[in-house]
Image (tube, rainbow, N blue to C red; front, side):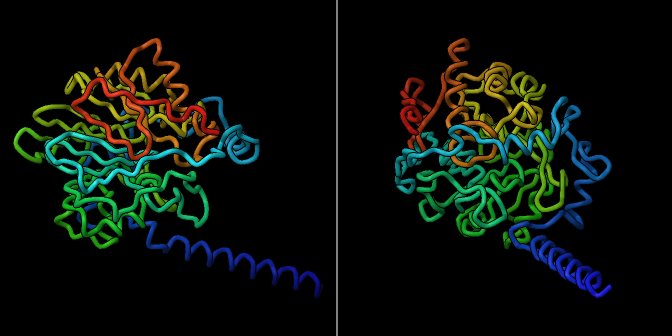
Length: 372
């Protein structure tokens, strides 16, 4: 009886410790805040919000038919994955972003889905992650060596910060807090502004939009908020903020910021409304046949580019974090191989390399070849 009481006492202490750890974890500042008050009321009026969650245009399971969570966990966390992490430091260039001429449209990719854009004299930053990891748990999902050569200190003042959705590999607490005094306005989906409000951004800096709404930036410069096929959530919250893609139209070009997405009819609808698209920036990495509905496979990227009427394609969401059971370089290898049958202009810069958007013949090396 004494032994039983002792075991039960230890079990209660362990359970209480785990519960306390869980509570403390969920109270972390970096988890952000759930929408409330007037922000939540606006969300409830959205036609894309039903039964307490945002919904995709078509039914979207987190796991594709024929796949189970045990299989996914085994392949991602137990089974060895060839070339999952690079052995070598990934190559990069350190461009002086402060000195880029403001009168030329340019792009600089920082790895994964983070990039800097200059369009029609406006400085735009998309989904910046400079903290070195893609998880709220310290020391997990760390960036590959060589991919964190930029920091917030390297950036000039930003006119518009675009956020596609609130997952940790797109909305990075440390980066967003450091950016607070450098950003003119934040453009995001409904509810995502709740995180920015918690992290000290004033209301006048936060612009939240629903799908099919728009924002006029300047004469002839308009941002259109469009669907993506994905999901959202930080902590235990799920689908309580809106994920989105964006069409950015200026007097000289149209750029599509695809965010995270699986393939769906929204690409063809966007192409019909705004095409042709001069540059489509599309999710191509951290994919798996088990979650094809929420992340494009490389063949889906090329079909999406065709639907969009895209001239050039910048494949992103790769080369920085190990978030899926494929080799670190597979996304770029596969889309390059598959494009032989499509002949889109693939824009594949090294991290930090300047892409000149008015130069349709700028060459790019297959920089990933020869990197172990």
